[in-house]
Length: 303
Image 1 (cartoon, rainbow, N blue to C red):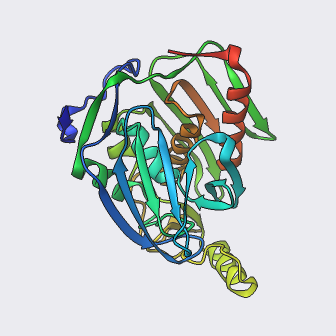
Image 2 (image 1 turned 135 degrees about the horizontal axis):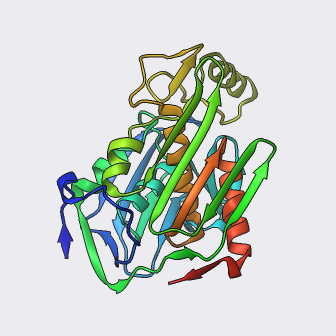
């Protein structure tokens, strides 16, 4: 069944279990742009895929060879300020915004072909991905979507940083951070197509302006792919108590941490159902939670 995405079709009422059919895209789409860390131009073509396929990135190398890299935790590679996967030497990084958008808009099976090692950053938010997905629509597949449903709490922490997931219907996230000159920022809510597009997807990658510019200069000086594409056009840059150009949504930094968390959770291989509380979290701690979760098979069930 082909479904066009309209926000009016979704409700943001009580959180309900994810129980539904698998789905893919109704058609392929293509998006291009510069990347955050390498600064290079990349083109991504996202195609429908059969039920059970999952999310797979196909890296097209300069030699013409292609390598498929499933978006799964076992292929995860630690990279600065991004989520990355690698298989057979082929790296694909900064996948979290597309992954979060696919999850929130209930897309389970796609093949994403990319001609570079990093996805485009666009304006630093997930809205361009959401618009592309909604533009082609969603096609349901006649197979149930299996979800990871929590049976008991799993938590990881590192100093003041902590993230935990406990049993609960649907996916409900509470995020908290505290930043100098900004104070505490909090966001809580169910992750539904409507709430994600309205409240989470517009939030941009963020960082301190002077640190970002210093990081960019470091990348240039050392020849490393680090923040080469950062600018006020690709990120929310903080200067003391304000964001250059203003925030796109209230408490934008904590909402973006929630966005990244949703994308990182998708590396579990199935949608995760539970109540997540994240305090000062980032990609490394998010990935540690996924690793701990997958290692504690008695803490959840696949239903």
